[in-house]
Length: 76
Length: 185
Image (cartoon, rainbow over all chains, first blue to last red; front, side):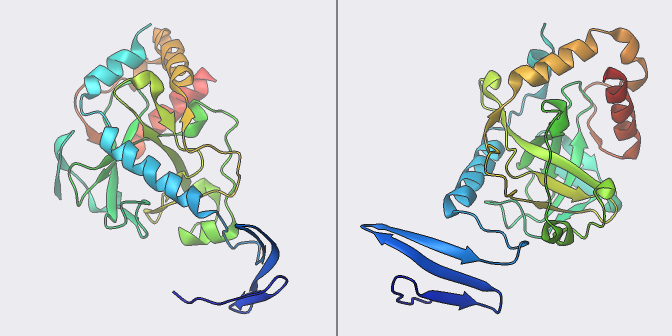
């Protein structure tokens, strides 16, 4: 991983069209501003982690008894 | 080709029904080849079955069934990632998590699976909309849909499929399903 040190207000450029600025530093929190083309996907890492975890749960908990599932959903 | 599956036994899969997930499913990046299994029951739940790992099958469902106002806003880059020119060629499914207490079942609205029908390539796309949940509980809505649909026998006469006979989801039963839904609406 490339590690860079930046001060408040300084930025880094990724490719020609993505810019990340340090907007605020407050204790242990850093606020970042991101300038990127509209089609660039930007998510907090936790979003990916949540989807990863949900997929794992979906695959692991998926029922094998489909008749029971069918019966339960059709029960009036 | 013949494919072994834990849930459905051995299935005959046509090459043109094989869906390629170039980037896989988050957490299952090593699995690239899938196909859709329609178990032929009335749950409206389909299964995205891995060809490479017989145990792995994701229950999926069309989100419109339980959430009619659901919209997957795809960016141009999302469309490109599955070579889509228009949404008419796409199928959108949400992955379901079905725990042992099935009343707790939930759908991942944040990251639907988008399939290009023509080219048979698919991707799990993370939508930008921060209000969408990865764990949207929808048991009641699904059940209401199924029960109200099956309580009226006139609407199901031509869509009955042989029970317990899993079939690869191809154009024909799918068209029947669509039709039956339209009638319901």
